[in-house]
Length: 343
Image (cartoon, rainbow, N blue to C red):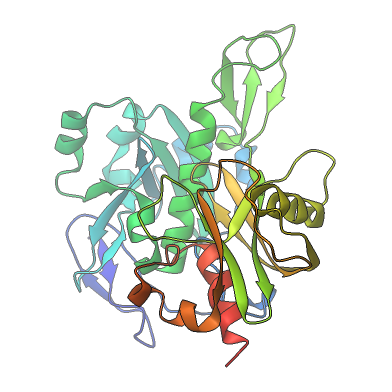
Protein backbone atom coordinates (compact mmCIF):
# COMPACT_ATOMS: atom_id res chain seq x y z
CA UNK A 1 0.00 0.00 0.00
CA UNK A 2 1.13 3.53 -0.71
CA UNK A 3 0.74 6.27 1.87
CA UNK A 4 0.32 10.04 1.99
CA UNK A 5 0.98 12.35 4.92
CA UNK A 6 -1.25 14.87 6.64
CA UNK A 7 -0.47 18.61 6.68
CA UNK A 8 3.09 19.57 7.70
CA UNK A 9 1.84 21.68 10.61
CA UNK A 10 1.29 18.48 12.60
CA UNK A 11 4.12 17.97 15.11
CA UNK A 12 4.96 14.58 13.60
CA UNK A 13 4.33 13.02 10.22
CA UNK A 14 1.56 10.45 10.31
CA UNK A 15 0.42 8.26 7.48
CA UNK A 16 -2.98 7.62 5.97
CA UNK A 17 -3.72 5.65 2.78
CA UNK A 18 -4.44 7.67 -0.35
CA UNK A 19 -4.79 6.45 -3.94
CA UNK A 20 -1.74 5.05 -5.73
CA UNK A 21 0.91 7.65 -5.07
CA UNK A 22 3.45 8.52 -2.43
CA UNK A 23 3.06 11.99 -1.04
CA UNK A 24 4.82 12.89 2.18
CA UNK A 25 4.41 16.26 3.81
CA UNK A 26 6.95 16.30 6.61
CA UNK A 27 7.41 19.10 9.14
CA UNK A 28 10.56 21.19 9.22
CA UNK A 29 13.21 19.20 11.03
CA UNK A 30 16.92 18.43 11.16
CA UNK A 31 16.49 16.66 7.81
CA UNK A 32 16.61 20.12 6.21
CA UNK A 33 20.04 21.86 6.35
CA UNK A 34 18.60 25.12 7.60
CA UNK A 35 21.66 25.68 9.78
CA UNK A 36 23.39 26.81 6.59
CA UNK A 37 21.39 30.03 6.50
CA UNK A 38 20.58 32.45 9.33
CA UNK A 39 17.30 33.59 7.78
CA UNK A 40 14.16 32.17 6.28
CA UNK A 41 15.21 29.93 3.36
CA UNK A 42 13.99 30.56 -0.16
CA UNK A 43 11.74 28.16 -2.03
CA UNK A 44 13.19 25.28 -4.07
CA UNK A 45 16.31 24.96 -1.93
CA UNK A 46 17.56 23.37 1.31
CA UNK A 47 15.72 20.10 0.67
CA UNK A 48 18.14 17.90 2.59
CA UNK A 49 18.49 15.62 -0.44
CA UNK A 50 21.63 13.47 -0.39
CA UNK A 51 22.73 13.47 -4.01
CA UNK A 52 24.72 10.25 -3.39
CA UNK A 53 27.09 10.86 -6.28
CA UNK A 54 28.75 7.49 -5.76
CA UNK A 55 25.63 5.74 -7.07
CA UNK A 56 26.06 7.53 -10.39
CA UNK A 57 29.27 5.56 -10.86
CA UNK A 58 27.64 2.17 -10.34
CA UNK A 59 26.94 -0.12 -13.26
CA UNK A 60 23.31 -1.24 -13.32
CA UNK A 61 22.17 1.38 -10.80
CA UNK A 62 18.82 1.78 -12.54
CA UNK A 63 18.01 -1.92 -12.67
CA UNK A 64 18.85 -2.26 -8.98
CA UNK A 65 16.97 0.78 -7.73
CA UNK A 66 13.71 0.22 -9.61
CA UNK A 67 13.32 -3.11 -7.85
CA UNK A 68 13.63 -1.57 -4.40
CA UNK A 69 10.15 -1.09 -2.88
CA UNK A 70 10.99 2.35 -1.48
CA UNK A 71 12.37 3.87 -4.71
CA UNK A 72 10.23 6.70 -6.09
CA UNK A 73 9.87 7.98 -9.65
CA UNK A 74 9.63 11.72 -10.31
CA UNK A 75 8.04 12.20 -13.75
CA UNK A 76 8.41 15.30 -15.91
CA UNK A 77 6.41 15.96 -19.06
CA UNK A 78 7.35 18.92 -21.24
CA UNK A 79 8.81 20.78 -18.24
CA UNK A 80 5.70 20.14 -16.15
CA UNK A 81 5.57 18.30 -12.83
CA UNK A 82 3.12 15.61 -11.75
CA UNK A 83 0.92 17.05 -8.98
CA UNK A 84 -1.90 15.46 -7.01
CA UNK A 85 -3.75 16.11 -3.73
CA UNK A 86 -2.90 14.78 -0.30
CA UNK A 87 -5.40 13.37 2.19
CA UNK A 88 -6.36 16.90 3.22
CA UNK A 89 -6.95 18.05 -0.35
CA UNK A 90 -3.72 20.07 -0.54
CA UNK A 91 -1.43 19.94 -3.62
CA UNK A 92 1.58 17.66 -3.33
CA UNK A 93 4.11 15.99 -5.60
CA UNK A 94 3.09 12.65 -7.06
CA UNK A 95 6.12 10.47 -6.34
CA UNK A 96 5.37 7.04 -7.79
CA UNK A 97 6.64 3.69 -6.43
CA UNK A 98 9.10 2.40 -9.02
CA UNK A 99 8.22 -1.28 -8.55
CA UNK A 100 4.60 -0.54 -9.53
CA UNK A 101 5.41 1.76 -12.46
CA UNK A 102 8.37 0.19 -14.24
CA UNK A 103 6.60 0.67 -17.56
CA UNK A 104 7.16 4.42 -17.18
CA UNK A 105 10.91 3.86 -17.26
CA UNK A 106 10.51 2.17 -20.64
CA UNK A 107 8.62 5.21 -21.96
CA UNK A 108 11.14 7.76 -20.64
CA UNK A 109 13.44 9.58 -23.02
CA UNK A 110 15.85 10.48 -20.22
CA UNK A 111 16.33 8.75 -16.87
CA UNK A 112 18.37 10.36 -14.08
CA UNK A 113 19.32 9.45 -10.55
CA UNK A 114 18.42 12.41 -8.34
CA UNK A 115 19.57 11.24 -4.91
CA UNK A 116 18.31 9.85 -1.63
CA UNK A 117 16.26 11.20 1.24
CA UNK A 118 15.73 9.14 4.36
CA UNK A 119 17.09 6.08 2.59
CA UNK A 120 14.61 6.46 -0.28
CA UNK A 121 16.06 6.79 -3.78
CA UNK A 122 14.47 9.15 -6.30
CA UNK A 123 14.69 8.72 -10.06
CA UNK A 124 13.65 11.38 -12.56
CA UNK A 125 11.91 10.47 -15.81
CA UNK A 126 11.40 12.70 -18.84
CA UNK A 127 8.27 11.58 -20.66
CA UNK A 128 8.10 14.55 -23.04
CA UNK A 129 7.90 12.49 -26.28
CA UNK A 130 4.54 11.03 -25.21
CA UNK A 131 1.51 12.75 -26.72
CA UNK A 132 -1.11 14.32 -24.49
CA UNK A 133 -3.63 11.50 -24.87
CA UNK A 134 -1.06 8.86 -23.93
CA UNK A 135 -0.02 10.88 -20.89
CA UNK A 136 -3.64 11.20 -19.81
CA UNK A 137 -4.16 7.44 -20.06
CA UNK A 138 -1.01 6.67 -18.08
CA UNK A 139 -1.58 9.19 -15.30
CA UNK A 140 -5.36 9.56 -15.06
CA UNK A 141 -5.31 8.03 -11.56
CA UNK A 142 -2.12 9.70 -10.37
CA UNK A 143 -2.49 13.44 -10.85
CA UNK A 144 -2.00 16.16 -13.43
CA UNK A 145 1.10 17.65 -15.03
CA UNK A 146 1.30 21.27 -13.91
CA UNK A 147 3.68 24.21 -14.21
CA UNK A 148 5.66 24.06 -10.98
CA UNK A 149 5.54 27.85 -10.60
CA UNK A 150 1.77 27.70 -10.17
CA UNK A 151 1.91 25.60 -6.99
CA UNK A 152 5.53 25.81 -5.78
CA UNK A 153 4.85 28.00 -2.73
CA UNK A 154 2.33 25.56 -1.25
CA UNK A 155 4.43 22.41 -1.65
CA UNK A 156 6.40 20.89 1.18
CA UNK A 157 10.06 21.97 0.99
CA UNK A 158 11.53 18.68 -0.17
CA UNK A 159 8.87 18.17 -2.80
CA UNK A 160 9.21 21.65 -4.27
CA UNK A 161 12.98 21.32 -4.32
CA UNK A 162 13.15 17.95 -6.01
CA UNK A 163 10.59 18.96 -8.63
CA UNK A 164 12.64 22.05 -9.44
CA UNK A 165 15.82 19.95 -9.52
CA UNK A 166 14.50 17.35 -11.94
CA UNK A 167 12.89 20.01 -14.13
CA UNK A 168 16.21 21.80 -14.56
CA UNK A 169 18.13 18.60 -15.20
CA UNK A 170 15.71 17.45 -17.90
CA UNK A 171 15.83 20.87 -19.56
CA UNK A 172 19.59 20.43 -19.84
CA UNK A 173 19.25 16.95 -21.37
CA UNK A 174 16.75 18.20 -23.92
CA UNK A 175 19.17 20.88 -25.13
CA UNK A 176 22.42 18.96 -25.16
CA UNK A 177 21.62 16.03 -27.41
CA UNK A 178 24.57 16.83 -29.66
CA UNK A 179 28.22 17.56 -29.00
CA UNK A 180 29.14 21.23 -28.99
CA UNK A 181 32.61 20.34 -30.34
CA UNK A 182 31.95 18.04 -33.30
CA UNK A 183 28.13 17.84 -33.57
CA UNK A 184 27.89 14.10 -32.92
CA UNK A 185 25.04 12.74 -30.81
CA UNK A 186 25.75 12.60 -27.07
CA UNK A 187 25.04 9.77 -24.64
CA UNK A 188 23.80 10.12 -21.05
CA UNK A 189 26.21 8.79 -18.42
CA UNK A 190 26.91 9.09 -14.68
CA UNK A 191 23.30 8.57 -13.68
CA UNK A 192 22.16 11.33 -16.02
CA UNK A 193 24.62 13.93 -14.71
CA UNK A 194 26.95 13.87 -17.70
CA UNK A 195 26.61 13.52 -21.46
CA UNK A 196 29.51 12.19 -23.53
CA UNK A 197 30.10 12.63 -27.24
CA UNK A 198 29.58 9.31 -29.03
CA UNK A 199 32.34 10.10 -31.53
CA UNK A 200 35.34 7.96 -30.48
CA UNK A 201 37.69 10.63 -31.82
CA UNK A 202 36.07 13.30 -29.66
CA UNK A 203 34.33 11.94 -26.55
CA UNK A 204 33.95 15.47 -25.17
CA UNK A 205 32.00 15.46 -21.88
CA UNK A 206 29.19 17.91 -21.12
CA UNK A 207 27.88 18.65 -17.64
CA UNK A 208 24.56 20.09 -16.39
CA UNK A 209 24.50 23.83 -16.84
CA UNK A 210 23.31 26.43 -14.38
CA UNK A 211 23.42 30.07 -15.45
CA UNK A 212 24.30 32.49 -12.61
CA UNK A 213 22.08 35.57 -12.48
CA UNK A 214 22.19 38.48 -10.05
CA UNK A 215 18.98 39.97 -8.72
CA UNK A 216 19.01 43.08 -6.55
CA UNK A 217 16.89 45.38 -4.46
CA UNK A 218 18.35 48.88 -4.85
CA UNK A 219 17.33 51.23 -2.05
CA UNK A 220 17.59 54.93 -1.26
CA UNK A 221 16.49 55.67 2.29
CA UNK A 222 12.87 54.49 2.47
CA UNK A 223 12.56 54.11 -1.31
CA UNK A 224 13.13 50.99 -3.43
CA UNK A 225 13.89 50.84 -7.14
CA UNK A 226 11.60 48.45 -9.03
CA UNK A 227 11.02 47.84 -12.71
CA UNK A 228 8.72 45.92 -15.00
CA UNK A 229 8.90 44.16 -18.36
CA UNK A 230 6.30 44.40 -21.10
CA UNK A 231 5.47 40.69 -20.94
CA UNK A 232 4.48 40.83 -17.26
CA UNK A 233 0.89 41.22 -16.16
CA UNK A 234 -0.25 44.87 -15.86
CA UNK A 235 0.92 46.62 -12.72
CA UNK A 236 3.50 44.05 -11.63
CA UNK A 237 6.87 45.45 -10.57
CA UNK A 238 9.92 43.52 -9.42
CA UNK A 239 13.57 43.91 -8.56
CA UNK A 240 16.13 44.33 -11.33
CA UNK A 241 18.09 41.29 -12.49
CA UNK A 242 20.46 40.02 -15.15
CA UNK A 243 22.99 37.36 -16.04
CA UNK A 244 26.60 37.42 -14.90
CA UNK A 245 29.05 37.89 -17.78
CA UNK A 246 32.45 36.18 -18.19
CA UNK A 247 35.25 37.82 -16.19
CA UNK A 248 32.82 39.71 -13.97
CA UNK A 249 32.42 39.63 -10.20
CA UNK A 250 28.93 39.36 -8.79
CA UNK A 251 29.16 42.89 -7.38
CA UNK A 252 30.20 44.22 -10.78
CA UNK A 253 27.30 42.38 -12.40
CA UNK A 254 24.89 44.02 -9.94
CA UNK A 255 26.24 47.49 -10.70
CA UNK A 256 26.29 46.94 -14.46
CA UNK A 257 22.76 45.56 -14.69
CA UNK A 258 21.29 48.38 -12.59
CA UNK A 259 23.07 51.00 -14.69
CA UNK A 260 22.15 49.36 -18.01
CA UNK A 261 18.48 49.20 -17.10
CA UNK A 262 17.98 52.47 -15.16
CA UNK A 263 21.15 54.60 -15.36
CA UNK A 264 21.33 54.45 -11.55
CA UNK A 265 24.76 53.90 -9.95
CA UNK A 266 25.03 51.78 -6.78
CA UNK A 267 27.40 51.13 -3.90
CA UNK A 268 27.59 48.92 -0.80
CA UNK A 269 26.47 45.77 -2.63
CA UNK A 270 25.60 43.16 -0.02
CA UNK A 271 24.79 39.49 -0.56
CA UNK A 272 21.38 38.38 0.70
CA UNK A 273 20.77 34.76 -0.34
CA UNK A 274 20.49 32.48 -3.35
CA UNK A 275 17.78 30.40 -4.98
CA UNK A 276 17.68 27.58 -7.52
CA UNK A 277 15.51 28.84 -10.37
CA UNK A 278 15.28 26.20 -13.11
CA UNK A 279 12.84 28.27 -15.19
CA UNK A 280 14.64 27.32 -17.27
CA UNK A 281 18.22 27.00 -15.94
CA UNK A 282 19.42 29.62 -13.45
CA UNK A 283 20.61 30.10 -9.93
CA UNK A 284 19.53 33.50 -8.63
CA UNK A 285 22.09 35.34 -6.48
CA UNK A 286 20.26 37.94 -4.43
CA UNK A 287 21.69 41.28 -3.24
CA UNK A 288 20.74 44.54 -1.58
CA UNK A 289 22.52 47.65 -2.87
CA UNK A 290 22.50 51.32 -1.92
CA UNK A 291 21.91 53.90 -4.63
CA UNK A 292 24.68 56.44 -5.32
CA UNK A 293 22.52 58.30 -7.85
CA UNK A 294 18.75 58.34 -8.12
CA UNK A 295 17.79 59.82 -11.50
CA UNK A 296 16.24 57.14 -13.69
CA UNK A 297 16.93 57.01 -17.41
CA UNK A 298 16.26 53.67 -19.06
CA UNK A 299 19.24 52.73 -21.21
CA UNK A 300 17.61 49.86 -23.12
CA UNK A 301 14.19 48.46 -24.01
CA UNK A 302 14.42 45.42 -21.73
CA UNK A 303 12.69 47.32 -18.95
CA UNK A 304 9.38 48.94 -19.87
CA UNK A 305 9.27 51.10 -16.75
CA UNK A 306 11.32 51.72 -13.62
CA UNK A 307 10.29 53.77 -10.61
CA UNK A 308 11.21 54.58 -7.04
CA UNK A 309 8.52 53.41 -4.64
CA UNK A 310 8.35 54.52 -1.03
CA UNK A 311 7.87 52.12 1.85
CA UNK A 312 4.31 53.37 2.35
CA UNK A 313 3.52 52.86 -1.33
CA UNK A 314 4.81 49.29 -1.21
CA UNK A 315 2.71 48.58 1.87
CA UNK A 316 -0.34 49.64 -0.14
CA UNK A 317 0.82 48.39 -3.51
CA UNK A 318 -2.35 46.55 -4.46
CA UNK A 319 -4.51 49.56 -3.61
CA UNK A 320 -2.42 51.52 -6.09
CA UNK A 321 -3.25 48.98 -8.78
CA UNK A 322 0.17 47.31 -8.65
CA UNK A 323 1.48 43.94 -7.53
CA UNK A 324 4.74 42.47 -6.29
CA UNK A 325 6.50 39.46 -7.85
CA UNK A 326 5.33 35.91 -7.22
CA UNK A 327 5.66 34.71 -3.60
CA UNK A 328 8.01 31.83 -4.43
CA UNK A 329 10.61 34.16 -5.98
CA UNK A 330 13.74 35.56 -4.38
CA UNK A 331 12.66 38.95 -5.77
CA UNK A 332 9.74 38.91 -3.35
CA UNK A 333 12.07 37.97 -0.49
CA UNK A 334 14.44 40.83 -1.27
CA UNK A 335 11.59 43.31 -1.15
CA UNK A 336 9.93 41.90 1.96
CA UNK A 337 13.18 41.62 3.93
CA UNK A 338 14.12 45.20 3.07
CA UNK A 339 10.67 46.41 4.20
CA UNK A 340 11.02 44.45 7.42
CA UNK A 341 14.14 46.44 8.34
CA UNK A 342 11.89 49.47 8.98
CA UNK A 343 9.65 47.67 11.47
